[in-house]
Structures are given as C-alpha cells and as structure tokens.
Length: 193
Image 1 (cartoon, helix red, strand yellow):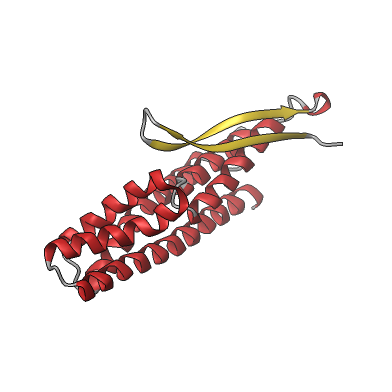
Image 2 (spheres, rainbow, N blue to C red):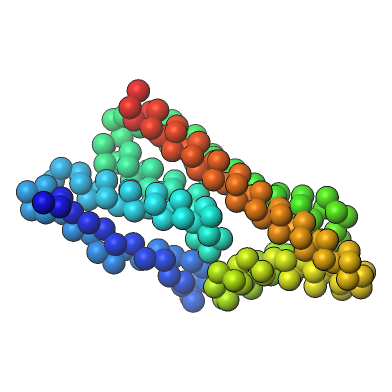
C-alpha cells in the first residue's frame, strides 16, 4: 500500500513577477503519520522540481534543490545533516547565481559582443519567461542579436553574439547541473556517513 504522495506544480506569480511552486496536495497514510514521511515527501518533491529547474530556465532549480535538502535535514531533526553542511550547501546555491550570469556574459564576450548585446540577452531571458519554453530558449538569442544590431548594425556579428550567448546559457546549465549533483553528493555524504 502507498505510504503517501505529494503534488507540486510550477506556476507564475503575476504579483511577484516570478516562477513559483504550488504545493497542491500532500498526503500520508494514517499508519505512517508522525514518522517524518510528509517532510521526506516534500523534500523529494522540491529536489525533483529543482532538478527539472536546473535544465528548464523557467524554474529556480538550484534554490529548489537547496530548499528540498533543508527540508530533508529537518525530516531527521538535523541529526545527520548539520547546520555546517547546510551552510556549505547555501554557499553553493549562491554560487549558482554567479555561474548563471557569468556563463552568459562570458559566452557573449568571447566573440566580442558589446555591452548592449549582453543587456539584450538579459532582457530577452526575462521577456522569454512570458512566452513559455520557446521564449526561454530563443529569448536570450534574440535579445543578444537585437542588442548587437543596435550597437553595430552588422548582422553577421550580431548572429555570432546571439549564438555565443546561447552557448553560454548551455554551458551555464551544465555547470548548474554539476553544482546540483555536487550538492546532492554533499548531502548524501553527510546523511549516510
């Protein structure tokens, strides 16, 4: 018989202008209540959502993984995973923001993109949020191309800047995935060793 289940749905807050997660349902069978199952289910849902968010630019992947790991530590009353481990995981979460920004900026700078191209890529990223997955994928490219065209007016250079920015996003995503798996490894080591 199932122990329980959790439903966590991604959504968008028009008030906060950001992606959010909505906990739609969390159920634990009566025989398993008061055993920390609900916390473990919530932790697993947050980590799973975070893993998806590390690949999909619409979800705050690394912060969701961090939240899931904090809830996972709480499920064990912080007996195995201490605050020191959580502080390290928090620093890795903060590092993910720098990685995200740096990967895009360095990708564009590598081909000599102008500041307008980088600003355009950032605007395209945020604008893409409203257009779903295609907007999130194409938004940075279109923004970088538009910024470069405004700066130089050269289509070939603008296309190179757009592609370099997009490649920077791909490398940033791969770096975030590596960071998430590092966080999961640190948590697992603290929990099981």
